[in-house]
Amino acid sequence: MRFARPVGLLLSAAAVVLWAFGVTVLQPLTEPIGPWSERLPGNNAYWARDLRFMAIMAVALGLVLAGRGHLRWSRSAVLLGGCWVAADVAIDRVDPIGVRATVLLAVGGCAVLGVLAGVLLWRERATPPAAERKTLTGAACVAGVLTLVAAGVESPTDREPELNQGALATAALLVVLAVGAALAAAPARTRTRVGLAAGLAVAALAGVALVRAVAPGTRLLPETALGAVLLTGVTLLAWDWPGGRPVWRHHALAALAALLGPVAFLLATAIPMMILLPIGATFTALAGNSPINAADSDLLVSLCGLLSGIAMALLLAWPPALGYRPGPPR
Image 1 (tube, helix red, strand yellow):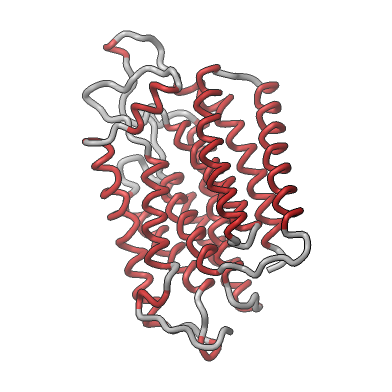
Image 2 (cartoon, helix red, strand yellow):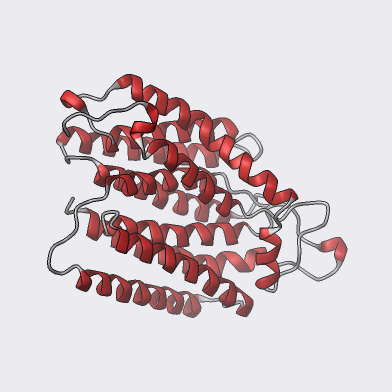
């Protein structure tokens, strides 16, 4: 798909700007007031960190889309994402703030992204690789699950207007990435699939707005519905249509997996992290921030979303695993 490269790079650049905004504008809102034990932060205190990490994941997903799922691009995207997280932690220790810092980080991040993309484009200058449909479908699944996490991010007070702004922007970017990657994974970009992609994007964006409009603590039902619609739509876009039509019974199985899978996987990853693996607390310490109150948990929900997205990709990016035997591409 010819649109994949420019759209992927544009979405990655937008994610860089979101990340810079998160570092310099959102993160200072979450910094603890003081070191005293009775004033230590509680659950969801570092919500800005999760939004930043999801923006970094969006940078990587955009590169996967730009490379049409090719191994060289995907491998570079993963490596860049890991290095970017390390850089984020180091920058967080410095506590940059203000418009100047935002611009510098955004420009610097886009420069790094541009250099990497330029090197990758130069290395494949002879013949662009064919699209790796399974990788693109997997990337769409990861973006879809991260959309749910971004849309449902909470803070201890949930009164910060910047929280809604950041969550909406991050979730909207992930929606576009999910739909774009799924469309790029399609065997052919027909008018029907393009129309379906547009309708899915509108429905998912409306779902994100609905999740944010619902009061915190009561968002499980709309989040589940959003995940079911978005991930089922991913399969409709990305899978083959033998005879020119979807095989509805297979997509019904996909819809069931999309309805139950994300919540189940999020719980399966969150509980061990809270009890056995204090990954969030480690990142908090590395960034030089105050630890979470002992009565609460320092959960890195962005990592839960990433792992759950990979699990959903294993289910939905491999149609034969669901009894699907694609016929001639349509």
